[in-house]
Image (cartoon, rainbow, N blue to C red):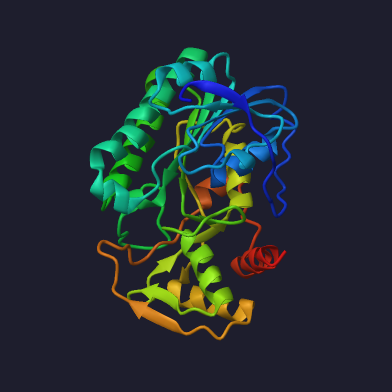
Length: 327
């Protein structure tokens, strides 16, 4: 049903967020990828006070995650008719759609580029046409293996996969559109986002995978020695960052969105096992090729310009996830 539109049904679980922002009201808002993990949380935060549209091809997102009162435009970013419909007379765009997989980008680099980079340029052009503000999901993957952590926004960019290269391209395009066309555009460089509604997989999906393994009493599988570190940020904090980026005067700049702290994968496995109360063994498998060794966000710029402040400690976020999974 590419290019068709429908009304989404059902709501999905949120663990509470201080995302109510009265400055984002009475707007026509588009969330691309709004049936997916992060996008659905953003949509839920905005639907009560705005005319909300969600553009999603439902390849990985789920219809039931789209808020009841949102209009679902079921289609692909690469489909011009769907894109035209979704962006007509829009005021604010939150761009969350994309192919979020390093492995798939390695297997299908052309598809990854078209889905992540080319489609974003098309969306930026629609934002320019409609004079709409746009907040774009970038990624910490653009930094590759940083020389120092915490990593600031002006650190060297050494992406290690087609996915990371795509994210760097859309990040740069977003800032270029701000500079060239005076477009209110902000790229947010997400670190490892986790929270309710996430499925097991790459990146922070490791949290969901570890919880599933611990609850089932299965071995908790850690790639490599487990000493690689990640900055895990709760999705409610990411929603807050998006809303701040949609209202800030400081556009045309990129912002790291993390917590400013890091946790090793081994420590994460132990925390989850302890919180579940599981006797699962922690086992180590082969390291993933190209895996980043250290990752931690410097968030001073986001604190200063966006007044962003992460509020959910990792242990509390994981405890809430485990409690939710028992209901």
